[in-house]
Length: 499
RNA sequence: GCCCCCAUCGUCUAGAGGCCCAGGACGCGGCCCUUUCAAGGCCAAAACCGGAGUUCGAAUCUCCGUGGGGGCACCA
Image (cartoon, rainbow, N blue to C red):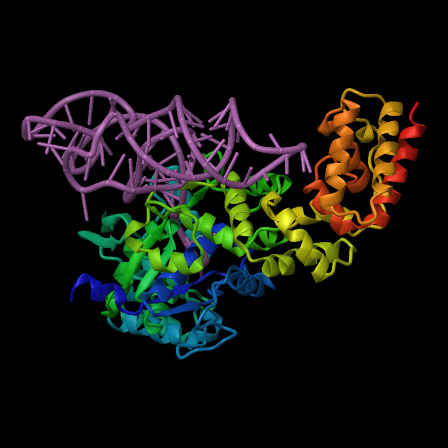
C-alpha cells in the first residue's frame, strides 16, 4: 500500500471527554483535529462520553460539550444523541461490556481480583512516600491463588480488578508525533481496571471502546503519555491491533509557565477572553476564528495560515503535529477572529451580530443592519463590538459627554458656535446625503480656517455620541436627517451650558 | 523522590546535513493612506538553551548538562 492510498483510508476518530466541567480549548482542539482527520479521509468522527466516574459527573456538562462541538462546527457522525452502529456512546451504558472484558483478562491471566481496602492502600502509599519511594501497589493480591480469590468473591467480598503489568523488560509504545517511547516495566504497578462499583477505569473503558468502535487514530492529550505503556499492554493482552496513537501537546498559560489554572482563567475573562468554549461564544468570538486559532497551536502549517474549515480539512496532517507545549496567545485569537469576521458575507454577519443588539434591548432590523455592516466590518474584533460601535444607529437620542463635544484646541463657546453653523448648513440641505453634506461642510472648514478634525469631530460626537465611530457621512445617511438635526441641536444646547 | 515528554524570534511555528549570516504569522516600532477608530499597504527590530562529539559541512544526528512541561488514584 502506498502513502497515497494510506491517507485515503477512511479514519474513524473520536473525541472522548468526561462530563466533569466546561468544554475548554484543549478539548476543542483535540476534537478539531479528530474531526479534520475523519473528514479528510471520508471517515467518521465520533463523540463518546466517558462518564465512568459517577462522583465527578457534572449535570449539564454533557449537553455543554455537545452544544460546544456543534457551535464549533464539529458535527459528529456518531454519539449519544445521534446514535450510530457502535452505541451506546455513554460509557455508563456499556458497563456489561467492560465486565465481560475484565473477566476475559482475568481468565487469560492478565488481570486479577484485588481485595485491598482503600485504607490499606493509603497507608501503604504514605509509608512508601516516607521512605522516598515511588507510590506503587505492592502486589499483595497478585499472589493470591485463583481458588482463594474465587472463594472470597463468592463470599461477597468487595474487590477491584487489577491489570497484571509485566515485571520484567520494557514496553515500547509508538506515538505518532514522538516516535517510540520505551519504559521499563518495573516502573509500573498493577493499575485498577475495574472498580469496586463495577464500573471500569479509563484504562479499560477507553481501550475496550476504541477497539469496539473500530477507532483507527487515537488523538488525545499528552497527559496520557504517562499511562500510554499501560494502555498498550492492555490492548496487547486482548490481542487487538493497536490504533495509531497521537498525544497532543498541552496548552500553557500565556506566560508559558504551567497549565492554565483557575486563576489564569479568571484573568482571561476580565480581559475579554476565555479558555471555555461557552464563554468564547458569548464574548463574540466566531467558530471560524476559534478553530483557526487553536488549530494552529500544535500544528505546523508552512504558510497561509488563515483557513476556513474546508481548507483545514484539506491541509490537515497528523504528520505535522508538534510535540512541544504551546502557550496560549489571546492577541492572536483577536486577530483571527477579526480576520474571519471580515471574510463573512454581509447577510451572515448581520445574522450573527443581531442577537447582541436584541440582548441590549435594541430592535435592529435586518435592512438597517445590512446597511451598517459594511461600515462596521473592518472595525470589529469580536461580534459584540458591533453593539458598542453602532448602538447609536438604533437609539432615539444620544447623550455624549459634554466635554467630548469641545473640539481640540477650542473652547466650549467656540465649539457651540461651530455646531450651530454646522446645523445651519445641514438644515439647508434638502436631502442629507453624503454627496451633498460632505462638500458643504468641507467648504465651511475651508473658509473658517478650522481643520477637518475640529469640525467633523464635533459633528461626530454630536451625532453618534462617541468620539470613535464608523465613517461619519455614511453613518449620517443611514441615521436620517431628522435625528441628525435633533442631535446636533441637543449638542448646541449641551455646549451652551458649559461655562 | 521516581518515570515520561519537550527545547528555533516575546508568542504560534517553517526547517527532516549543505537551498538558512534561518522563512511565515501574531504582537511590538516606524512610514503611507485617512474626518475619528479601524482595516489595508510598505519597512524595521527580533530566535537555532549550553557543552562535547559525528561529519568536509549541523538548527537539523548522538551524548551530557540546563531549563520547561506532564504523570505517579477504586479521576479522567
